[in-house]
Image (cartoon, rainbow, N blue to C red; front, side):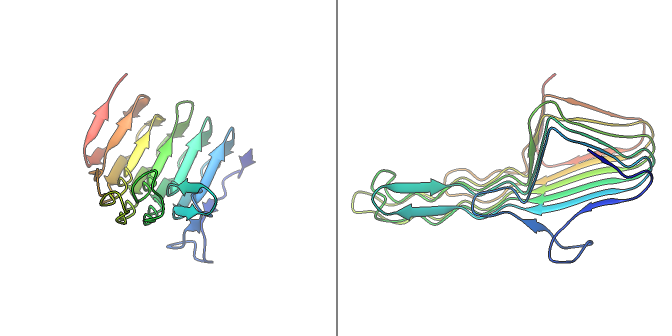
Length: 212
């Protein structure tokens, strides 16, 4: 648990709190928050993450790793009161296929989503704006194997979550940009089985799918 008592909480990388992103290891999320509570009581929350790239290794068997999510929040609560909540995630790119990987005919690995999370997470403010932006990674290119032409990996979704996102009077915006892929390009797919509520301004860019 992080209780900031009016202070700001920033997750970033490269020593740059404005534009720097925390970068994940191979196939890992840039920022991963699970079973946690962040409460700033009026301070801002800013998170910027970039998923680690995928990998294909063919040595006495094959290891295939997809790109990691830029930012993943699971079963957690983020509350800011009057402070803004800003989340920006970029998915890791998939790995280029290996022609020696005969099991998949040299297929590239899939990319990671920009922002993702399962049910059980709540993002809430009273008057602070909430902005969620996700950029999916690009699927790894295929490499021709002796059996067939290698297919590319799927692109990552921009935003794919099941969170509750609510603000009493603040603006709420969700923007997704899907990554290119060999088989499937993800066109900023936004999904939620959670709940969205705002008495302020709500905007969504990209394809939006909703299920309650």
